[in-house]
Image (cartoon, rainbow, N blue to C red; front, side):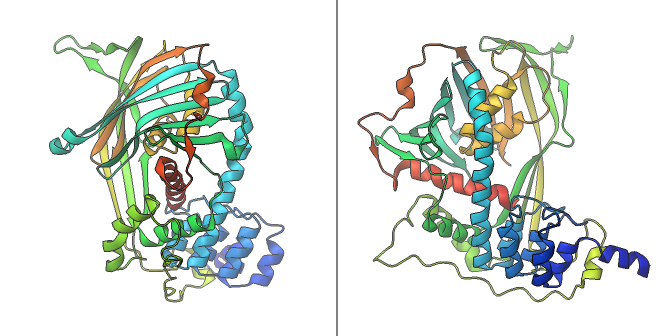
Length: 457
């Protein structure tokens, strides 16, 4: 046993340096060792540095490009663990690095995405969204929407009236989202508020004020992770008829479609709140509403907004490196605060209609959705389409949006066209740029929150 323990202790040299607070040795080894390596708990060196409050190690790892958007075996990222620990400077550093890495990844994908859009024929498409609930009173008040999508060359325009949907509340408007792939990144994304006749360029880089706003949101709200578990999903042909049963086939718009039951669809939700006080829990909704509506933009009475202070650090862990490194996988010793943790799961009955006649392929759809996924419900659609679906194109889908709400999406119209008006992808001459107000600002914050939520879980 001592020999086994000694062998285990020699593994993961970067992790060991961090555990022991040996910044000098870490600075030497970091140049020759894999900074992305995971130990038996799925923790990267950055995970450990954050969980143990090793600030110098965190900054050193980030300077060498340690990935922020990576999960351990428990399903949490370094940013999630930093929020739990509660040091504001560390959280800010991770958020900035996360943004930088997201931009770099986006720019790496961008040439291939633009090339794929150019190769795709120009088209017009309509997506109909019907939100439904098994709770009768809720179902009566849920919205519906038709997204109209035009594509020409490497440009895409989406017109929608449903800007965001969350917690039984939704933002209505008359919004157009324009992506011009041939423009430089700072001018490629534009949001039009057609009622107010305003437009905003959606920036890839946030201001210091926006970063600090986001840190306040992260420190003041639950650490959440929600995902659709695809491990146990299977598809079976849907049946029709009372006596003589047969496979269900129907027309969806102009397209023949085969219907499938989706079995084993489970929405898994997890949350942590060990970093929050009772007062925090009461203030959460007010803080979120204030920040997402942009009310913190600018200073009140010439003074900067009050920022959330760092928490007192959790008690120093008594766990030694040797004890940590031999712990069985999935049984990570407690290194930070005592977890305040809750998880839930809900199974859904769902169907998907697959059509072999639909002119668009699933890969083409994914390229389109990659551009317009800042809208949260469209992000859910992209996650669903990434599953291994039956043959054909998913012309009608049920997707869980919230534990009590399902969206039914229908591709009700599609046509390749060579007469798409190029003016659709330009800002009208009578629109004014307003970077501080309107739905453009709202969408910018939604993109911030979406990025943060991806990192937290």
